[in-house]
Image 1 (tube, rainbow, N blue to C red):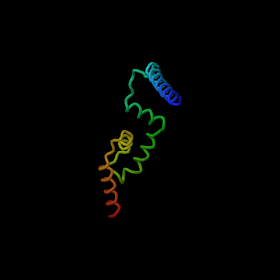
Image 2: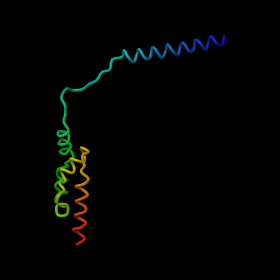
Image 3: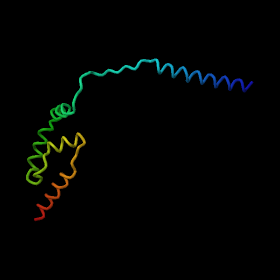
Image 4: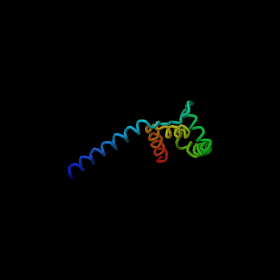
Length: 103
């Protein structure tokens, strides 16, 4: 009698799994996407305007142009957001600044 109950329990679990799988497959998956694509440049421009980053970059350029002549803060900001940071240029600028201050 105990074996029959275990077998029925296994069958019940199997049916539940099968029905769950069928329900998941049948339920429609709605995706609400627009057909227009937004490029990264327009996103960056809107973020710069919303956060007033342009004035920050201009101020940073004012204070760093004497020491870091070859670094453009706007370009550095853009490359940092896109993930294309040129570490060589940054390190070379810092090394030049250290040499400039040591003389």
